[in-house]
Image (cartoon, rainbow, N blue to C red; front, side, top):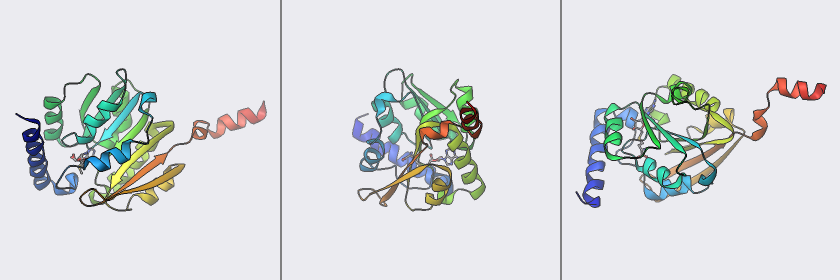
Length: 209
Ligand SMILES: C[S@@+](CC[C@H](N)C(=O)[O-])C[C@H]1O[C@@H](n2cnc3c(N)ncnc32)[C@H](O)[C@@H]1O
């Protein structure tokens, strides 16, 4: 099969999964190249060891992340849709990729099973505005705990829906916009500062020294 035919068949496959579960898939087509580059370009990939991707779908971000991370890094891709996970396992042969059938809400347990303590970056393609509110809250809380200090949560969405949730949990949130995407995308880089590595106990014991 040619690359063009493969791309068309991946898009049709994505559309079929959207009609099967519109609220979880949240979009009729995969994310555009322009939005992928805009979200990933600010990261210094040469320093990254562990990346988590939520909702990889047919893998448009997955492939691009793999092309940017170094040979010893690892990408853990988590999707609730088993059909997408089986598809990714079939079409991407890369030892650095671990595909997990599960929920982003369980990211901490999934990372622990993979032998990882924390992620440098978590990248999300989840349709937060159509997911149940309790699930969105659980994902936001567990993601914040799963990202190491100095790391960030990278999110793309079609609205500003997640902005207050990110601002409530992260130290700094940067906002971007991509017009060459259907519909135009909002991008968020939510950072955990290095200072958040120190707990109140650390601060108290340092003060006592
Ligand atoms: C909008 S699609 C994004 C697909 C792909 N990343 C892209 O950019 O084209 C959303 C994806 O999130 C997945 N998903 C929905 N809820 C999830 C959850 N709680 N945990 C992990 N994946 C989830 C869906 O199955 C779907 O693959």
